[in-house]
Image 1 (cartoon, rainbow, N blue to C red):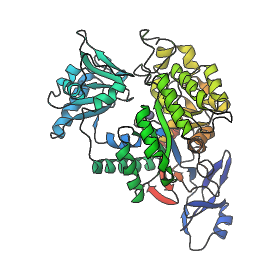
Image 2 (spheres, rainbow, N blue to C red):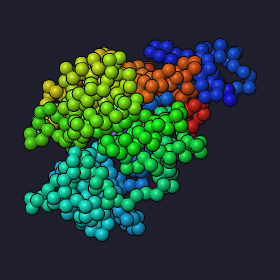
Image 3 (cartoon, rainbow, N blue to C red):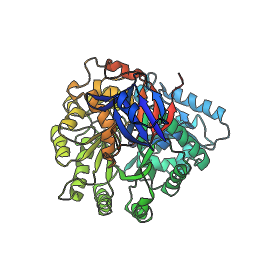
Image 4 (cartoon, rainbow, N blue to C red):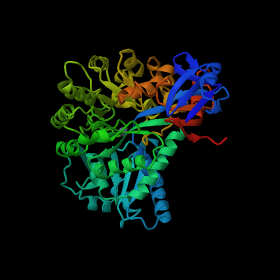
Amino acid sequence: MDLIFYHGKIYMERDRFAQAMWIQDGVIREMGSDAQILQMAPPKAKRIDLDGRLVLPGMNDSHQHLCMVGEHQALCDLSNADSIAEIQRRCKVFLETYPDIQGLHGVGWNQDYFTQGEKRPPTRQELDEVSEEIPIVLERVCGHLSSGNSKALELAGICADTVIAGGEIWKDAAGMPDGIVTENACSVLDRALPPMDEQQLEALYIQAMELAVSQGITSVQSNDVSSRNYTWMLPLWKRLHAQGKLLLRYRHQCCFMEPQKYAEFLETVWTQRDQYDDMLSLGPLKLFKDGSLGARTALMRSPYQDDPSTCGTEALDQQTMDTLCRMAADHGQQIVTHVIGDAAVEQTLNSYEKVIPQEGNILRHGLVHCQITDAPLLQRIADMQVAALVQPIFLHYDLHIVEDRVGKDLAGTSYAFATLGKLGVPLSLGTDAPVEPFHPFRNIYCAVTRKDLNGYPPEGFFPAEKMTLSEAIDAYTIGSSYAEFKEDRKGRLKPGYYADYIVLDRDIFTLPAEELLQVQVDMTVVNGSIVYQRVI
Ligand SMILES: [Zn+2]
């Protein structure tokens, strides 16, 4: 099947554009001027007039949780709740709407957005007021802290003397669990919830893909697989692929925190990795070293400025991390690790250093988030050629709290996207959806302006760290392709590359950065097929 896109402004690389592009069998065959391409392409080719619009390579979100985005559509939405009372109200409405549910799973609340009452997570007693019959688990927006009611604690087996490595169970004055748990204790609390059935999940994942392509995403590197679900999650995605239901390219980031489980995965799945292809691929081992800045569980070298009683939570002890990294390296599997605090960055580099061979970081191990850093750490990341998978959209919330949490000095060398680029660190962009929405152009807006979505602060947060528009686009496309070893065939508009691209409603190269927030995607093409077209 031949397709011609002509009369456009097609981004090839910084300051270089083509007018027309000839697509054949999912791959870009030729690019050039309208006259050249219209003349050389076969007469039967389908022609699409771009009407002068801008075409970019499709966005490749280098770290998010697509399945969770899908699942959240079926859960109780608590985003932007302004108080604990509002959380209780929304939960009650949800229960009235779905009276037959066996458990209430809520997501998206953030106590820093409360404008009434105390700015703290809801407790067990407050959730018992909603229901004492069914388990209730309410995840904070970051996914690193949850509140549960008494029924949930009971079903999860969490009591006064429960100890969970790499997680905390908060206690009340009487020494009883108050319902709030962090990090690894969150997954224990989740066990109180009934599982969704696979058919429902498939439908939700397809909806999540539809949402992603409508916003201009053509590839995701998604962390959905874990030791708890890989035996059904991997076959589910294979099935979607075999049935032709993939709307985008999907790469698994596989989370295993226990050596025994990881060994099983290496034996049964990793040895079969040639069953995968460029639409559905098997990616890195995904580890968590720490938590989130919002929940004060990011692992810091010094105590938090706004809570000196804590340095955060180590979600994975160093010895286990060394073991997992050694196993991955021995099997030729890349590693990416969730690191937010400076101690988490440092300790993860220590583990990587032990497994990176003389030739350098050939498996392209990476740091996901890579937020709180000082200058020597940034230099060390560069020297080790470790990749950074960053989320500029996090600035929208974090720029309001980071100085309180870690102090102004350290804040000034954190979220150091421009510096990382200048030091030659391989950079890619993502959103960590559903922590933030997929919307790539909001993410790019934060990268180039370093303002929140309301335009604060006017000069940008530590403006020396602004990326240029081309740098941000390149990190989102070719940079993300590098993170998955596909930079020779994906992430650029160039002959021989996959025909994965998007048509925008406006030319972002000629407009003020504020307009990035209004960008609409008119069309999304994956592997030469139009997977989304905006109804105008
Ligand atoms: Zn994540």
